Length: 373
Ligand SMILES: NC(=O)c1ccc[n+]([C@@H]2O[C@H](COP(=O)([O-])OP(=O)(O)OC[C@H]3O[C@@H](n4cnc5c(N)ncnc54)[C@H](OP(=O)(O)O)[C@@H]3O)[C@@H](O)[C@H]2O)c1
Image (cartoon, rainbow, N blue to C red; front, side):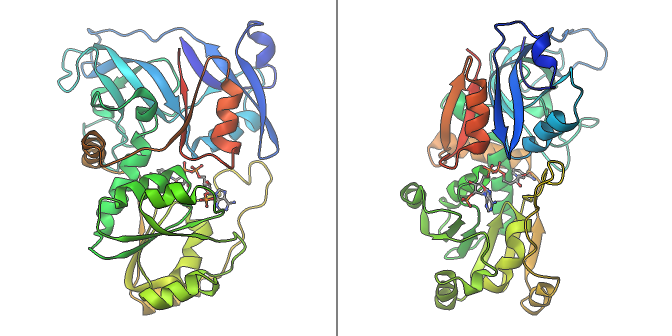
């Protein structure tokens, strides 16, 4: 079976001459990736403890920001002759099921259910079903999979579960009210693109912050009222020539959705309304120390916590979401009210191009997919 892997420095020499391999540069670090063949896992319907197991064949997969840490770990600290199989999202077909499986049948199309913080089944870990989503044949517990409707094409399904489950959770937990002013940061991150689509179904004013003006027309079509370009060096949003007057006009943002708290939290506080809620699902600095690169500058000190107190603000952390969040997103997609931004689909020998587009393309808009032929 096939796996999309990051290779050690000498692994290339050990693979067949016609192996699909490429080297690209990520954050100034050369990274070698390729398709590696391994034996298929053995699936047994009789093995005690595996009654709820499901054998799947992955048809397409994608990578997320979180995978960069694993990619650099393998490249910098991994065994020279080894490889590390990556991927955090997939779409697959069910090949076989254990005798106690009740939610799935052979032939169903499935994606990962990252339900968190509590697993739906005792003894099964919460969170992403696998950090090796590109393994072509896998065995997973039925509670870590969810059936998808025929309306979702494979490429979209391989881009769906983490972004949809996380942002539906964030929007649910914010308890957003009608007419609210919502600020979404890092507008073109996959997470924020999902958040903007999820907000489209609410009667709210969505303002978005981005490092560039590209795709402003697409973002407006997705429901963004105003896209504001903010230089990463901008000290505070309140002093920004567009955000400052906007905040005076609207009285501050009622909600902030932010995928990178180390870039945006301290800068957001001054532009939030009294009693406003801020929610974050992650940080930018997930791998910079490992590759000896500069971490994001710290904008201010803990003094901004004075404003958090004086303005009765809510600062909320969010990790992924519930099965019901993923189900709600799938229902919305099936109804046609949730759209998913897929940037491009790669297959065959385009392994380097897939990785390059995923992490290096400044003009990427949405998820990048690798599909097995
Ligand atoms: N905990 C969870 O459950 C969970 C789930 C999903 C995602 N996350 C987290 O959410 C974050 C985003 O993940 P993702 O996969 O959506 O990321 P992504 O698509 O790779 O994000 C790329 C975007 O980030 C912004 N960006 C990149 N470099 C920047 C810089 N130096 N300064 C400012 N902005 C920069 C740019 O958007 P603009 O140009 O538009 O600003 C860029 O388009 C990560 O921290 C990830 O771990 C967490």
